[in-house]
Amino acid sequence: MFSLGELKPILTSLVLPPGGLAVLLFAACLLARRSRRLAWTLVLTSTTMLWVLSCEATAYGLNHVLLNTYAPLSAEDANKAQAIVVLGGGVDQFAPEFGNEELTDTAYKRVVYAAYLAKRTQLPMLYAGGKSWTSTSTQTDSEAEVAARAFNRDFGLQLQWLDKQSRDTRENASFAYALLSPLDKKRILLVTNDWHMQRSQRNFEQAGFTVTPAPMGYLQPPVNLPHDYLPSANGLRHSYWVLREWLGLVMT
Image (cartoon, rainbow, N blue to C red; front, top):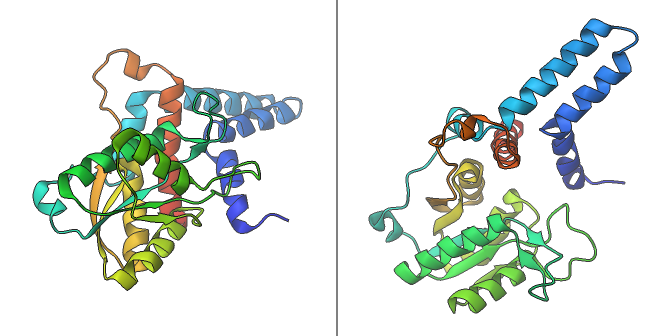
């Protein structure tokens, strides 16, 4: 039996693109004999949506319409915090070039920005990330342990706290609070992508933190015409990120 947490990524994949669009095309195939008009409507709808959602300009627009976007962290705001909390973004289990599991590109960019902030502010850091709901039994280390190696290897920095247990953003917040609140460190800089910040800030404030957003990894505005309006794998991925965050806000 699947738990609710394990079902969430499966259901999300079936609702959001490209999975949701594939479901529409499959439905069109089933309806082709009974209702050709409805079948063609589903085909045209899904292919049009695939084109539109695969454009970088669409992802950027959706981000500004559906989610809050955040100004970069100022030096004044950075000085109000007692610690930096970095949210996990996934682990690549197959990274033979390193000989170990490695952070995904998304997670590593968060590490780069967190390292920049740590050197600038001298604040201690917590990395929040265990093994996600989609991880397999072959994953040996938690994401926090993988991140600790990256911080030390690439930036010469040590993480003061590792949350090795959390599996999603809500658990990131609760486990981080359990680690930091006994130390009276409740004012934090929260490092994650701009498109992930709204839900993350809400979860961490509900856990009891005073959060100063430290956003990074902004979606890029459409400046490369006509390419930003042509379908691409990156455009579809970015639209997926935004729609997943919006769905998470609506459903929780």
